[in-house]
Image 1: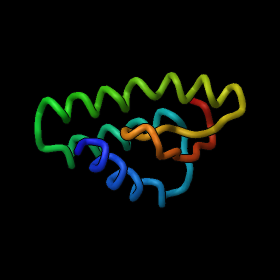
Image 2: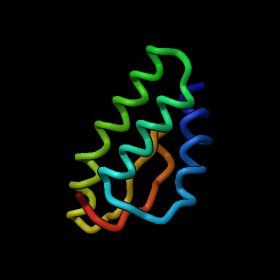
Image 3: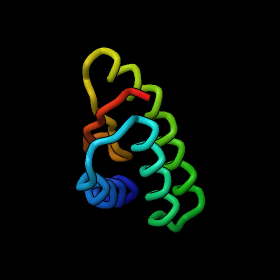
Image 4: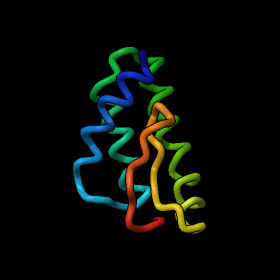
Length: 82
């Protein structure tokens, strides 16, 4: 269920122009806060968002500029690695 919610919800975030890993991570956390009602699942979803930020930066520095969403399948383009 969390996967489905994350996949659908973050897809709408992607329509905005690309950004940094930190900015996309913040959008991910904000989405989880607003859309995952169960506290335990919300906390887990926010943790996934936060854990992705350094992974995104490392990927970006290697030339792969994308942030992976909560479900693990959606990739959100980024412009800068910060």
